[in-house]
Each structure stands twice: as C-alpha cells, then as structure tokens.
Length: 377
Image 1 (tube, helix red, strand yellow):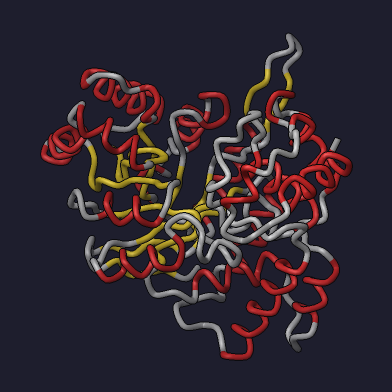
Image 2 (image 1 turned 135 degrees about the horizontal axis):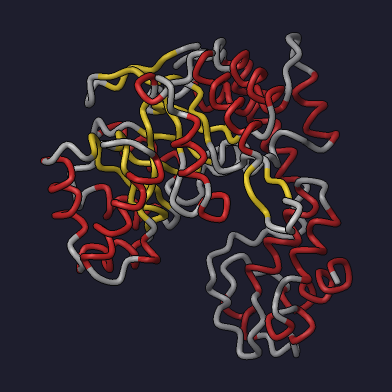
C-alpha cells in the first residue's frame, strides 16, 4: 500500500481510503433491510490487513446502521490501526445541544473514545451559515481541546465560491470534496483542490468513480483507454489520475465485496503523486472528450433559466438526459425521470420561451425539453 504524507498533521494515510457507505445490504426473514455484517466485517479486516489506515463512515449511511457496523468490526485491535472519519449531519442540527447529542451517539455506535477526522457533513454556503449560528466552530474547538476529536474537517457540495468562503472561515485540518476526471470544473473542482493545497489543507476525495459510473464505461471511452500499451481498467485510470495530484491525501473507494477490495489494494499499491506521464494524461483528456461528445445538450447547470413559470425542472431534466447517454444507462435515466414529480417534468412546458431568452448557451430549451420528454418518459 502506498501512503501519502500530510505535513500539516504530521501523519501518513493510505492512498486507498475505505469508503464504508456502500457496504452490501440484505433483507432479513422479517422483511427488514440491514447491512450484511459478516461480509462488511470481512471487507474492513481485509482492507486494514492490506494496509488501509483510513476509514470513512457517517451517521446516516446504511439507514443509520453504518457507524455501528464499523465500530463492531474495529474491535479486537483494528481500531488502533486506523484513522477513523465520520460526519455530523448538518440537517439534524437545529440548536447547539443537537451537535453534542449526536456526537455522543456516534462515539457510542463506533465503540471508541475519540474520532480522528470529524467532518461537518455536506456543507454548502447556506448550511455553513446555519451551523455557525448554532456555534459549530466553538463546538469543534471544544472537542479538539478535550481530545474527543483529533482533526476538524468538512465535506462539501456547492459552488467553488462557497468552497473558498468556507475554507477561509475556519482553521480546518482537512476537507473532503467530490472530484474525478469529469468534475474538474464542477463544485470545488480542480481550482478548489489547488486552493486547499496552497493553504496546506489536505484533501480527501469522494466520488472518484461517480458512484461507479466511471468504472463501467461506454465503448468509445474504453477504446481510448485500450489505445494505451498497458491495459488497465477504467477504475484504475480514474484512481491513478486522482493520485497524481500532490494535494490529494487519500481517495475514498466504496467497496461492496472482497474482490473489489482486493482490486483496490492492487491499484493503490501502484499510484503516487506524479505517477502519470504526459501520454497518460493525454489519454484522460481524450476520454473526457469522448464523454463530452455523448452529451445530448450543452447545459452547464447555471440555472439562469430558473425558476420556470410552469415549474419545469429544466437543469434537472437535462442532467438526467445527459447522464443517461454519457454513461450509456438509458434505463437508469428513465427511472430517474420517473422519480420526478409530474409537476416538474418536461411535459409541463408550454413553450413560452422565457428560459431560452436568458440562456447563456443560447440553447433551444423548449425544443430540447420535448426531445427529452419523448426519450425519457
């Protein structure tokens, strides 16, 4: 296993961080859904035995069962071998005491006396303002002073501008962002990664495979990868690209079985900062271009078209439409579209043109909405 130095914290973490969110679930005889504990435990033990020393869980994962599963699996000496990360659910915090009550529940579920990396979960600009109002900065300071947590951190989903504001508004020990070969300019993006690096704040990567979408690729993308002399899976290309960045502390990978765990142990034993040649980087650029060619519409999600007078979720529909083609998952696209409220679907468009008149991309939005409705409904 390769390890990454974190100078700010004076520690080393494994390049492969075990994401615990995707542990396999099973249905019990009485119809309940729960984590397949024996399999989850075997995944954790194999990962740690293979050199993984960073585990990521959260209060809400696996229908609220994940922390308990991780805590049980880390008994018998495994807790001492890892840095344990979990997250405070911002949406369950309305007052100061809520943060303390939730933290106590987390310590109990995880069967530990401290949490190494404690993240404020899924921050956006609005959530950060709310959490500041109820004293989250003082809360983190107190937990660190009492050695109940080692590092104060946050995970993030919002614009780059929001990321910059949050990053500069507290003395963070780490941040966690969504980043992959397609999200270079999305959310915090590459610019955010570089900003954190300039402030000596380590970055943990989530959604490196976009929930597995970048592991099973369209034929045109696979052809790009296959053009390189050394044959690698799409997942290996994606992970290798991420680990090429100095600023990346660890890359989370959510695994569902032992075979996937073994494959990750193999991949992350071969990656390091600066591991990619110019030729390899060009392969990634070409793969990204192939994905872009598959887009049905050049919507950037800027939301200038919103709100629609008829209630149509224009950027949401176009995102579903693009994803269904980009990742060659038409049935998934139809399922996602069907989950939209009827009031927000493209069928509600009356062709008024209000959206088209303000679109920076000059897209024929009403026409494209009709096409999307035909293909997705």
